[in-house]
Length: 148
Image (tube, rainbow, N blue to C red; front, side):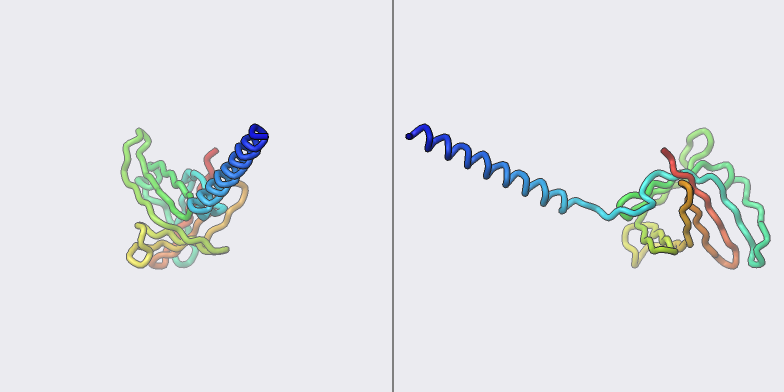
């Protein structure tokens, strides 16, 4: 009888510990779960177009065309790196993003109330992200390709 009782207690202990372990895993997943968006991923800038106030195309400056740019979007954050064709880092930025159905806001820095904000209209189609913003009467359109 004593072995049966000990076996029962051991089994109960194993079941309870499994339950508590499962609950701990579930709660830790919730604690560290981040917000994601449809734009999460690594993006490569493939084209930049500029237009004046009347919609006429304006040539993009040569240095901007010579740079290679990657943007990484994850968990409502972004980081952007510009490099020369030989891999030298020219500039970087990082911060928070806010995304609505038609607007994409980048906050350079991690305090939106103190950060410089860029607002874009955005469209996603066939693994390409098009972002458009107007600044001082000039429209800049960036086309990004999702990197596999």
